Picture (cartoon, rainbow, N blue to C red):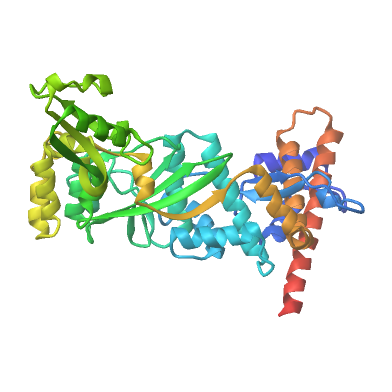
Length: 465
């Protein structure tokens, strides 16, 4: 027995049937031996009974567990990782899309959902809510990476440096943020108008060292009051230039030229161009006279002395396509011509493709690539949406209250009360011994109630089996 235990024993003196430090600890150990130490805190969710008296366990709100947020989630073989894996495996799903679908099914109400799935959904929503609301984009994104690795479990890991084989040749933060079920992900937790940025050199070296040579971007954007949109797109050798310094085609009206027009013909033509059924004045590109001087778009300017006239305008028919390059083309490739060479090399041998990328200004100058939010959204798959609002979390509690109140809530509410009483017994500032002893006695009662609640759940499960 250590000094602390001796002091407590002497303070309360041994009496038959009286509370001692050792007996209290033994009761707690016996009560808790079948409970996994999953959580360090509890989440208070307010509850108002629709009718009748509020159960004693619910008078101070619904107490449910929440995780301690830690970067250890992103690593394997540690206690924090084991805890989150044990808890979130109930959600199921092997992809981001599947996990979001399963999570939303529970949130919207699934009558077949059991307690493990319900509590998993509540804790995942609350943990994500804490990461998104309480931290900056950079810190929240880092914690989100570890959280994803944790809920996928297995060998899924967060990549935090460039020392591993998969990051050879990269400098600074690697392109891969997490590896989930063997798939390399770059995670972007961004506000709606933020561009997707990255190291051009690092993504080239990522392709050169990772098999298969590809990277999946998971873009998570806040689109409303605590509502998140999840988008995915995968960059491969075949579509590299569609994302990194992209170019696209857009429709344009072909320009037409009519020359040798007299003053009268010009008036007739311009009247047609300006009519509601014609091309409209905005369709006229240029009007010039016999001396190739510009002519105003007004009938009084069409004098015989300036004839013949030439008109250039864009017609309604004969639509053609024009290639439009992003600002990144010159920045990363040096010119549209080199960009086209890289685009053609995408279909050729892999080594030649990589070697060509290594000669571009973006690589030799260690430049950043940029993908606009509008373009990224247009070429991505929407894999789900998640509402992290407090009202949504409360809604889950209300929908499943019948299931939770009968088993789960009494256990965690009593556990919360026990924890508070124990803490105030040891850490309280009250000088009156009776107050401290009152806390110890309350903790003992909590321990008995906790054991009873757990026994009830075990007996119920035994009967159902």
